[in-house]
Length: 168
Image 1 (cartoon, helix red, strand yellow):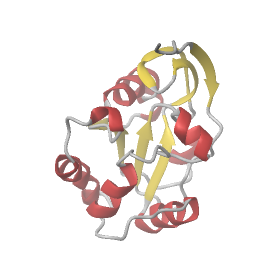
Image 2 (tube, rainbow, N blue to C red):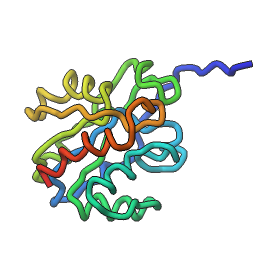
Image 3 (cartoon, one colour):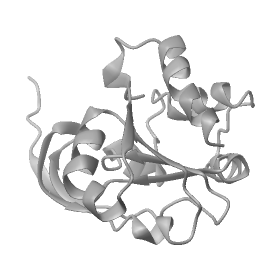
């Protein structure tokens, strides 16, 4: 018997990952249950975010939280999420209700961000709806690296995410 998931209120608890040298801002929607459990962005073991970025940057894939932080900062990559809170069922972005956006100016006022990238169509749509007017920066929609988006191959993800190199 399949256990029924229910909608729950989730509050974003991770600080944005950036410094004054960050040049691109990568935005997801909200940390997944696995990410929240692991205490860091893109924490599901089958999420391809970190392996894809490592391949794009021609670097070894960071494994630990500390390695991921060092890698992102060294490469000029900021990581955060569009939402500060929402009602969501598990990791299903399609179930998001009552979204509350993050104040992206926390990053934009301190770092010289050249481009904003949304890591999936829901993050892109939420950014356009809740953040674009405030930031004045168009976002580029990239395919999700989530294991649920298995129809997009690793090679296709690397090709799409390689656009960040134009801004680093």
